[in-house]
Length: 489
Image (cartoon, rainbow, N blue to C red; front, top):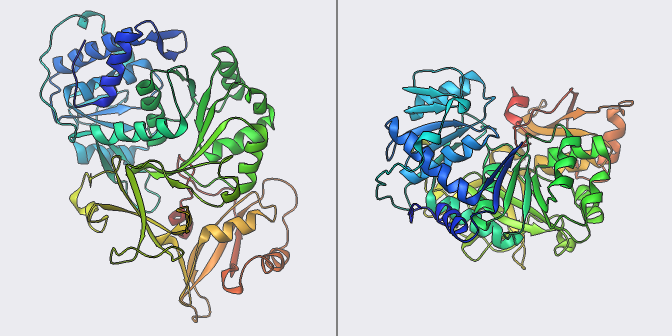
């Protein structure tokens, strides 16, 4: 059994392997991996990485496939002090080239083409059986050393590499488990992609708690997902709002039949409309419905639980734990009083200390405070409310307008999806004005004049879009965030 005091995640897994070695940790198809087997395979994977000369500080790229070998290698790299760069297997070539050009990895796993790395290996080509039982000297590693570099989805520009230490990723899991109440009896169906901090974080959370994680390809086949929920007696899962819309559209409220067994559902990565929050509360009256706010740089900094915070459904909640501090700061880094709008900033045990490229750190921090780029305010009870991205706010004659506020109002009129961006005022008077992009999947398109008339009852005049355009689809990142830059272009 290995000793990895630098990694609380690995320490927790080894503890479970000692106390409950026959407890199932991972399920992938027909594979059922116990905690005892998991530790054995992590050690074997570490020996394999060592055999191809991966050492402390080396970068390896892992395509985040729902295969047990991905999990073994991911954790084995932590054991050796290597740094994981986790990517989406379906990454466009230009994004992959950009990432590889920056980190210069010594090995790539699960990627088809070599693209210049010394080793490029498919997961099914890795045989760990001959690595079991062989000794390897583990280096001394500090908990503050980088464990993962996660590249952002780049909603407003090129991807940024977020450096996360062993302490960061463990701190995040500890915070989340404490809020949700995760324990070793939980069985989670993981349909989220592992290439994003939400899905990868759910994997770490369950393994730290000593529960069982079921690797599900994705949510595309709801029949398969529902079958897994029933057969494995799933007690929780995570989803993004776009997945919830998909579930509603394809199955209506049938997912409510699992209300008796689901202890928790975690929702995050994008805004969840209030009407959907209310529907979830109706379908799952006793399930803990946890909606998070957070970025890759500051994983799940804020949480709200819908039932207990039913009177504040417009809020994103309060800090996830006493180890996390959130504040509203002005443009000089000074704290603003409750009720006044400014930039939401975070510090805590899960917050990154740096981006991979030093140039990306410029204006990213106010001292220890990470600047999220989100605009909002806090009320007198400590609840936070968002009004939009600082860079996406529309400056209408000096009035700061949130695209999200306009979008919520438009959706309330029965529009399936929409997005708003700033455009130059055609009259040259106000500087910027809102433009709305609309999607209507079925039925007749309502007249713009009628939409404007109804919006006038919901929004002040300067927030009503000046231009309107019907499009087939709103561009979104894999986590469901609107890519407004693409609409502007």
